Image (tube, rainbow, N blue to C red; front, side, top):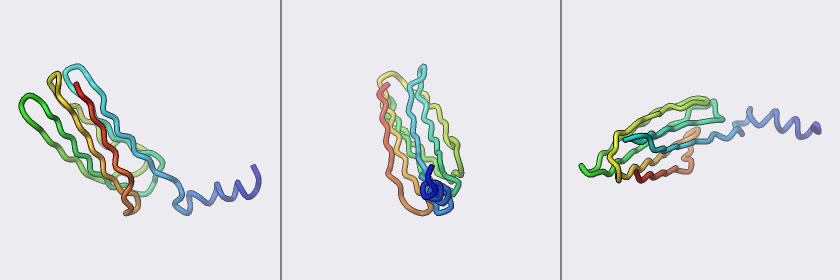
Length: 110
């Protein structure tokens, strides 16, 4: 590694250059669905809002979870009981150091 590349690699974390990423998983389970939200690559606090809608034979159920996460981890793991044919939608809005990040959306038809 050249000295310039090494210096740049050493300074990026100090300058806040580390990029946080969000992973929103929506997976089918027997008679249910699992929603998992994970963050990686950031030591500064991340703020998030996760809205989950379940469209099933009984109508629409909606939940909202919001909070702050720091560092690598999965602040949300939720299992939803759902009838066959139900639709699950999950929408994530999040901020890194007060700046809005690209929203994530997932859909799962059971």
